[in-house]
Image (tube, rainbow, N blue to C red; front, side, top):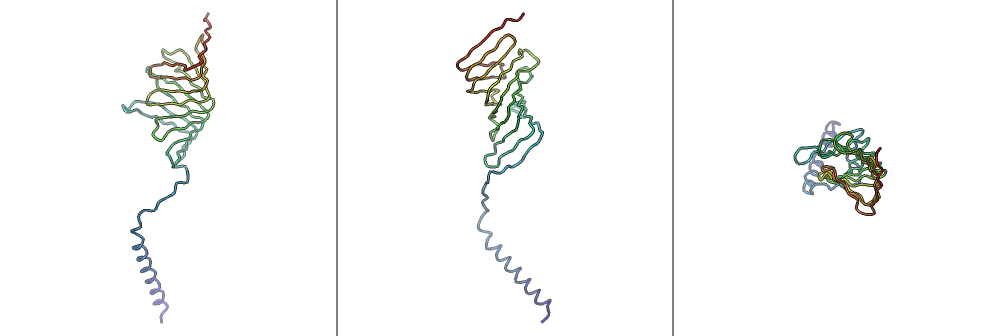
Length: 186
């Protein structure tokens, strides 16, 4: 017997078995993958501009690192900087140590040394606020916290527990334990 005939016969048997195996397993449906909580993608040193339903800027995000989790499609962000447009086209700037964004981008959570600064130009007097955590709702042009907040403006310092900001109308209010100190300008 020729060695080429033996190899050809073995290859024929392997091909037939492979075809039979494929045909037998094709009706078992798609394979289910188990999500192990891994990251879909990572962005480094980036800027993202989010638009509202009318195509206008609702917020801009800059950060050195963003990770999108595969399991729930949420994003975690290192030292985020959010810019939320005010009605006059200038921006409120929000910063924190960490950030989290919901899967559809309706909510952002800033945690650790949160700071908010009013636009440096325009009709709004220079305003800053500081707190430990803040939830931002860009589609509503709104931010809120239940933590202690300290706000300063020229000639005035306010603090309180709980705070809401409407960046579109440039309005804010404290929810409880509000205190204020007015220092006349000379």
